[in-house]
Amino acid sequence: MQHSATNESSDAGQSLAVIAEILYLANLLLLPGLAFIALLVLYNKHANSASQLAQCHIRQTVITSLWAGFFIIIVNAGILLFGGYTQPWTWVVLIIYVTTIHST
Image 1 (cartoon, rainbow, N blue to C red):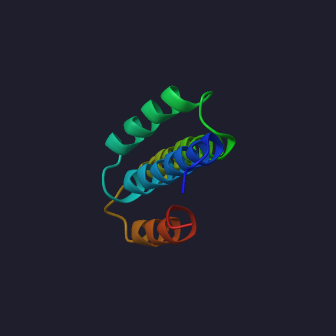
Image 2 (cartoon, rainbow, N blue to C red; image 1 turned 30 degrees about the vertical axis):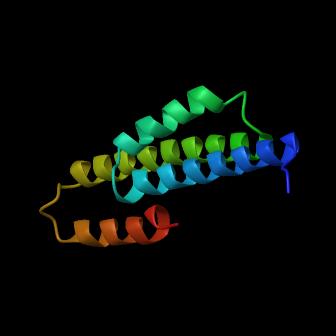
């Protein structure tokens, strides 16, 4: 059975979408920063040339990673502003943050 050019393009787009999502999860869980850089490289390389499915996933993962980074900065700034990491309520804030924002 032969694949048509449309099927090959669809397979490539699906593969790029999966790679984008893997890099997003790696940025959150395994290799923060390094996986984000790889995601930006993927975005710069395929933002306009990939299928619509891949473009959507790549764009979605970059934007979501930027929002996650923004929230990490805000939460850390708030903790430092209100007493630092030695305060008992810091763990409450961190647990709420991880439960509501990071894991979502």
